[in-house]
Image 1: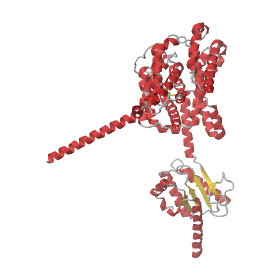
Image 2 (image 1 turned 90 degrees about the horizontal axis):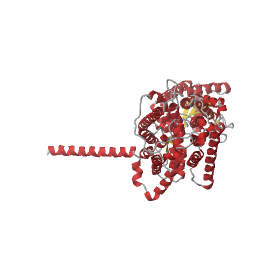
Image 3 (image 1 turned 90 degrees about the vertical axis):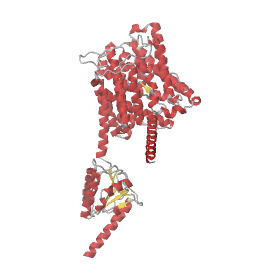
Image 4 (image 1 turned 135 degrees about the horizontal axis):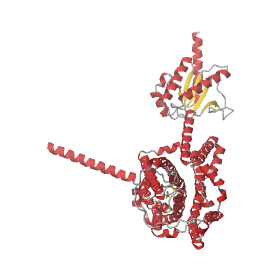
Length: 606
């Protein structure tokens, strides 16, 4: 019988382990493959038509954009198509956004070009194969970095980068992208310096090489793309301006042989599936800084776009899972000749406006691109480079956020200063150093506001028991005999000494200006959301100091979390528990009663 009991117990434990493993496995599948949460319930009758229309619209748009961004990245145009086809089948498996349009984007392509269009140790340009190897290695490494970031849940880091800093960086990057395309618009090339402002100087210096034919052709393309955009907006149409200009440009270039007049063309674009190839690590040290920069920028762009579109359509995205989705897209995409990709503002907006319901639209977009490079690439033989440059210029103009600069200047000069530091450093020093400086500026601001927390002296509004900052409310009455101070920040090791210094400063100011001796200090803790051990030590020291000096010290509006931490820090040994008040006015009245009581006892003793 005992043996049977042991057997039964063993079997129960075995079954429990199996159930537990099954639960963990199922949870992991749904956690890391969000497609399992929505695709089995996909409403084919209700959603398929919308997704087909939206996906096809973006697919046609992406044909031209993909090739243009490949040229921007310093790669042959077919790699733009390779980056827009099969990889778009990967993101829907791992991503949580229903509308994110992922693929080649201007800013990431520019960062890739910092490597592909640089020179080797001998000062020579890299060959086409070397450029492609660099781009695929960058995509592979960006994918690995983002997957790692997603797994360790590092998505919170985006909170440390302020919006003005990112806006300044993207505005400067737009100017750098425009500079990179001037060679096709102006008809002549110059030495590309690592410093963008030097490249601009070189273009101005060699202006005598200007050719009017490609310039006129480019301006005409830009004009028609803008005209189509206005027409679409006015008549509520969905005419794809870039692809329209691509085919019109091909037609005129082929019929009139415009390549004889200084307008360069693509020549033969390979047809068929890309070769499956792995990354080559012989130049890893060269691409490492660019990998980190792209991983960071990719993260910022993708999360910002996905969050915004999620808010519009009433659903939430998971930032860490988006990192995983973007990382897997770049990692697996690198094996099918895709250079680094990110979320696109314009294509996401088009997907949303065209009525996309799910990522089935993204899969349809990928299929459109795959069909293009399988059967239709010969059509693009006479595609002018200046047309692709025009498409890029029209796209990146939206990144120049001058309205944001004016808005920041109106509301807060410090944010405007951060915007300008980010913009100028990126344009003067380069994209990679620019983003590094932009991040440093954000962190410096975080530290600055931590070390210099907002603090103010409070006074009572006449006829009320309400206390406000005397700087903003000039009619406030200062209560005689006391100091009312508010600190609008958590109290921790960085700013604890600042609080002590501020109170000492206010003591000195009080003694100089008031005949009545100081007999109470009340600290309004309304904005003190947290306190650490250093902060508690400072509060204890202040409490002990004022207890010896016979000065009443109290706390008002202390939240429950901070109060428990104060109790754990044994502040009740220096400050009595009855000196914690729910209102400032209660503390003031209590301090006055305490003073009268003290004087009464003193008089009785004498």
